[in-house]
Amino acid sequence: MVRRITWGLAALLVAAACSAAPAPKMITYPSGTEMASGYLALPEGGGKKPALVVIQEWWGVDNFVKAKADDFARKGYVVLAADLYRGKVATDPDTAHQLMRGMPEDRAMRDLKAAFDYLRSRDDVDATRIGSIGWCMGGGYSLALALAQPKLAGSVLYYGHLVTDDATIKGLSVPLLGNFGGQDKGIPPDSVRAEDAKDADARTDAFFEKVLKKK
Image (tube, rainbow, N blue to C red; front, top):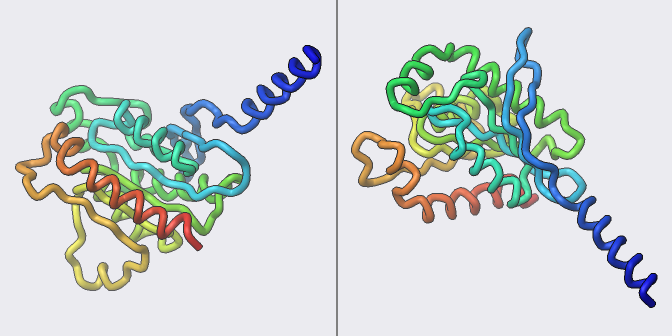
C-alpha cells in the first residue's frame, strides 16, 4: 500500500511538472540583419495557443510590462514583450524621454514586425490568432503594427498616438480596441495604471477572448 501511494504521488508530481508553464525569460530573435530581444512568457499546457506582442511604455520593458506579460500568459497566451530599447530601462521621466527620442522609429517597427514573425514561427502558437497590446508610447505602436501587419488578429491600445488620415484609416483591416481615461491630464504614469484600469482591462480581456480565442 505504501509503495502504491508513493508511486501515485510521484506520477502526480511528474504530471504537474510537465503541465507547469516554463519560467519567463529574455530571448533574442532576428530583426532584419540585427538581433532584437524580448521578454517571453508562456502559458501552461500543450497545443497551439493564441499569442500577443506586448509593447512597452516609454520606460522600457520594466517590471510593469513584465507583470502584464506574465498575467496574459496565465490567461493562456504565448506572450512576447518586445524590448524596443535593446536592454535599457528608464526610472525617471528625463531618461525615459531621452530613450524614446533616441529610438529610431523604423527600427522599432522592424523589431515589432519581427516579434510577430517570431511568434508566428513557434510550434506552440496558432499563427492566425496573434494580437498586440501597448500602453502610452506602446499604444501608438500597437496601432502602427496593426497598420503594418494586416495578418494581426486584433490590436489594443491604452492611450498612444492615433492616426487621423482618412486614407490610412480606410486601409486598416485589423480589429481595434482603444482604452482612454476620461480624466487624463497629460498621462502621468501612475494615472495610466490606475485610471479605470479594472474596467479597461476587463474590456481588453473580452476583446482578446473574441478575436483571438473564439473561432
